[in-house]
Length: 302
Length: 302
Image (tube, rainbow over all chains, first blue to last red; front, side, top):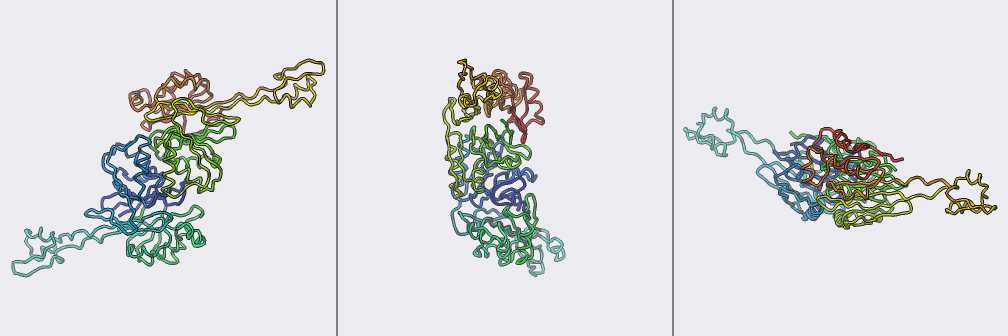
């Protein structure tokens, strides 16, 4: 599982600061999360093969999370895309994109599906045999969701060496792979667990931007491997965080601590601060494993 | 009069190629012409004081000329803009921008005026005491206008030296400035023209993107100082120009030649070509004074 930050600054795009967009590589999927203006150029810079993106998750309809989407949808058309594209986002997103494409008489020639969200409860919005995605209702100035990406537990895999040591006949291997115990010729039963390897531990990533400090999300974040939590401000500007429904670095770290996550990624920094190093310092007063998102940077979970 | 190219490539923004946007500095105005995705970042790079932009002219509603506008409008709000902003563009532009601002609950706190265009005839859309702007109806796949920016002729200015040589009393100076002839004490009449300097020759700029080859626009372009005409293709791809309602470099030069313009600026290049130098070469087979638009480059008309 690998997270690539395309942009992690709040408010307005600048020469060196891109608004929110990320790509999560998980179980052969390339999920795009948020799509601020300039995301398609950041995708090109990232060298990710972005035609592989089939699912785009939009947290909310503020411009710095969303204004790159019409351009990306159009670019896919110009690049000759044929495969379907699914967009998950707040109610209204379909009307907006549809209107812009209509005005330009540029309807896509690939299938475009909108999955509009309006529930204020966590909602399973994507699932296949390996991954599931659930919304994390956030509290911001407008309707906003974070997203929880979870790998499913894989199948146990045959331990051929163990099977041989038990003198299991090879004809039994498909039963072992199907999860069954084995009855030996002696009548002895060998538990499936002794003949197989544990599947890799499923990994998980939670994306939480934008939100005020909100402990209600902690249960959903419990023990995720990676948590991205917005930290627009430092504690010195806690009053602005309160007013604009954003979080401080310390508040983000408190959520990470309460949810016992493995690693916290901070981002969505206000460009008022000269250095983002202060965000890490502040967060580390509460939680041990903090890293800073930076445009172009990747984080791998093994 | 100074034209700054923010972006001059067609279709999709790339790492080094920005879609169409330009700033025209004319008689103390800063006019923004088209606004592809990433325009606000290009404005920052240009070092232009872009809060001074009060008028934005959008040629048509294809994404590469328009998708940077919602972000720019939002950024003006975040930067605390108070002065009014006027947007001139095809019918539908108001609905689009309004919807995006509404979805983000981010209505501007400065006055925002839309001037929607739907006429297929040239139309005077802006005028003050120094400048006027007229649409140039173009022929593209959707409703499109170019724009003709013209300085008005200024007032003649007093030639004090000449007035003294005619022994004109200083009490007459305000009459001279008002354009009147002077009656000397001798009864002799001195023509105003002999007592004043000619005003500077008014300058003009015509912006024509996107359009197929269309001789009908030539009369409007007659003898402009600067003509920007799109050249998406070279003659080797004339069939694509025909099909997509764009122009070749040679066609752009033919229009410039017929209109006897002073200088032709080419732009809107397809990114299929390795070098844009070929556009200049091709155009120069028809017209002598050709320059190439490049992102970040400026052209001054003295």
